[in-house]
Length: 429
Image (tube, rainbow, N blue to C red; front, side, top):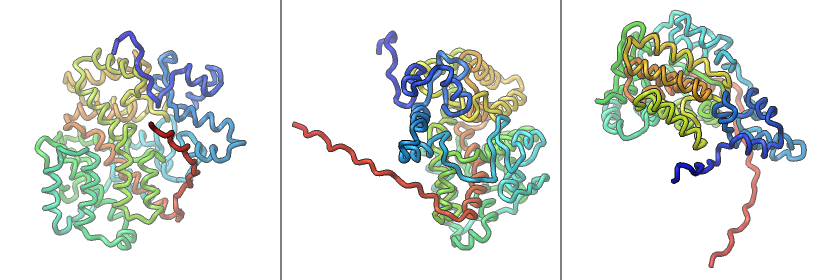
């Protein structure tokens, strides 16, 4: 392609001129929609470079004529920023980040609350501030043979699929009856998180399954599984990452877990349903991509140039501009600060943190949780793909909480589709 020619327009992003034409509003109104979180923007601080998600634009367009088009209004309600809601007492999204059961996640991190205590708060509304280690779950017969097979496949699949396989394998070998699991779902939840933690050892250059030791906290077991430092500061950083990832209201993966729960699926199946939805560009894979760009950038300038090229091609910037935090994701900032504190003058960590700062200064890009996890992964010398898998591991705690809440709600989550017949294809000669 001639470099002087404009890049092809992607179907999922619109520039300001296109967005204004679709909405029929003034620029000030468009910017107000962005500031209110109704429209997701790439580079929201640089209006001339901003790009806007087509689905959000169309959703607002449908809202404007909803009184005459009830079917369209119902369809719009299912989109980002729509009117379809589920009552929940688990997590509230605020400008300071998520608040779990009324407690700000960032404050929990500042107080050094262990991940186990955060999970118990989400599940039972009563945290154990001491973070008492959970009883060690024991694997069922045949699990060792299953793990050997899983180890041989570790390099050939995605990290989230590894987690899903580890969870399903644990369930298959445990031979758990669904009715028994539902009676003691907290014991099941703890065993799932322990099995998933052990599975992160499969990301190492020499894959291995690393079961937790008796009375070993999740964060310490995670550090050992990944083959990174188990010193106090490193383990506390992993605890912080898990707590900040633990829940984020009705994200697509969480909604998938609730749908499965509403249909009567057991907890294992709810977790793997969520992991399937977590695989997309805006969650797990997006975190993988953010990490890859940080790791592979030869210099700060190379990193910024890559992001500028993506902006010109109207592509999302991996690790930046979360739609729910137009002024910046507090979770990402907290993890970047942790990464800097662990840098110990190592060039790779310094370059990663400087690159994120340069992206903000050059493009107005706001770092999100994903790029914070990526920087922390570099600081702790984690194996590649670990940051996104840690996000999924932490999020398992929130998925369990939502499954429990959906079971208590007692209704089937089942939207209806409005059938729209397609025109017959034109005959071909």
